[in-house]
Image (tube, rainbow, N blue to C red):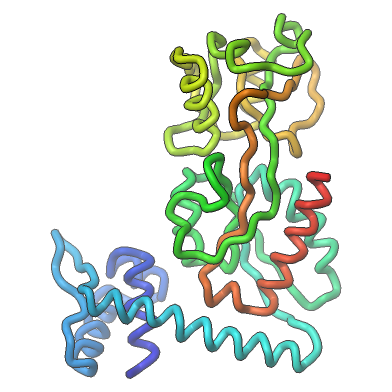
Length: 298
């Protein structure tokens, strides 16, 4: 059994198409297809089958793709033990991080990791909750979030570490009548115009919670992703919104108030393929990020 065939099947399982595998592995689609045929011939079992205009794994293909994770994880554990034998881990950790989480987690982590021989390549991003898992195919660590649980949707197959629990506050114009209150309730804010997020983004779960508690619909007047744009819209009086507490800075015309009576805390979570999570440098980076998160939340 050729480990390269297992790795190819895993990539197809994670990426979903021959075209995507070819792009990620810098091969042509025809070369990937040829390698799949070679794997079928060597293993004596059908590994892929047509679906629409593409291919999908058969049951045997999925079994071997799952086995590829075990093989890669075992190799990573051996490499981690070798790193331990040598003294301390060194290498590169590629991180894709939710922008608002990267802002409070990554800079202090880079300071702590400086001089340890661990280089961090950071990409900031903001995608729907279920899309964070797909980023793990191309990064050692992905920092995502969820309002519903410590397992972002679609990340059940990944290694996961909670880095922080962060409250979300209601942002409103400083002259708004509700700014006179220290704490807001669902009934205080349900009838306000809301600046929301695109469908599938975690903050939407809070608005769903408001509707569930009050039995009344939320009126969303704008849907944007960038928190600085959200702040500007709130200050202009367009509506109220939710902002993460750890990175919302004082701004003229903006008031922030905690929201009680509905879940308004997000899980900030590090995600990784199981084999990459076994790498010593990845484990060290996760440990530092977790320490930063705990310090920020304290």
